[in-house]
Length: 212
Image (cartoon, rainbow, N blue to C red):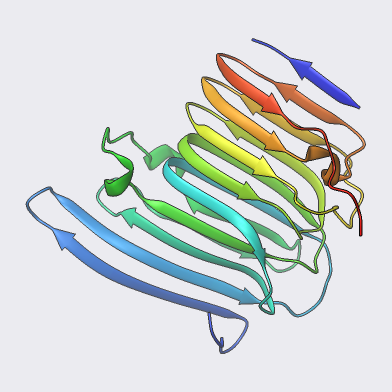
């Protein structure tokens, strides 16, 4: 159903974290990179909540034995990373602290960047809360049980190049002043697809690629 509305190598232990710092006093910036990952110990379902306000974000599947792997470039004078994983509930919260995010007005070359890779084995309840972000969400190969994408003033692309092996309960997209393109959404294997669009352009490709 479619409802539309207007309006990294080897890792020691379970988790691996690396941080590097580059400071630019001329522009009052302190660019840092955070590299964090968690080993995949089983294929139990997990919940993933991503919050990211400005910059570029990419999401894709990983073939490595990891539940997740995040690489984040950010300006520490403007925002702080957000990374927690609750082992008992298997809930991951990742990205940037939303209350700290401020629009810089800089071009993409100076913007932060978040690259997130997720396991192909574990069924995922995936939520993405995006602001003024250029996003490339390639969910091909992931097992998505539920998907919610909230996008503000952004350019967002979402695609499924192969059939989602897990039946998705609902695919929800909520847009503000955003440009959004969804490719091969029939491959999401969703019972319902709901799109609530504000000001902006929306293109939906509901064709699935033929199976071999």
